[in-house]
Length: 148
Image (cartoon, rainbow, N blue to C red; front, side, top):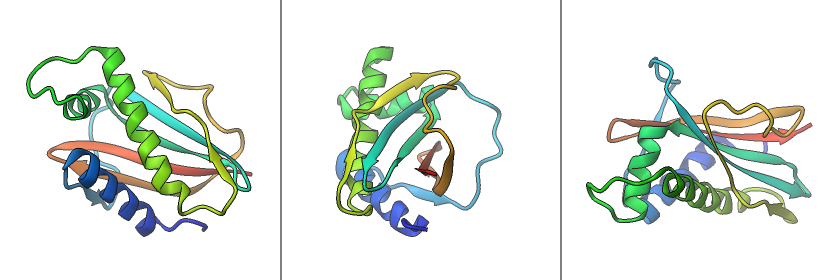
């Protein structure tokens, strides 16, 4: 395993603290919750290491992140703003993760999808690390996959 789950957790924790001023906790396992409408944000890596970083959360939790990023305490945010915020978040996370990967790795612009996603994936991947996180009752998953 190139990137340990502990290193991935530290990278995510640092981004959440520095960008969002939110303490985040790692969950030992995926939560047992009802399915929710997901929003998925992806950055692909190419060069000396190929794969992707995939961030998933509920649309409601993504709206909370967008309100923090755009400093809108109680004001509603529209879907475009939610997508922009998640793109910025996964882009920042990918910068931290890229520092854990071999030299010569380049990252794509973020892709953000609402609802079911089928065709974004890097074909034939293996899991490098996959974690679940919780903050203030909200949950997200972050997965790092490597192309075979």
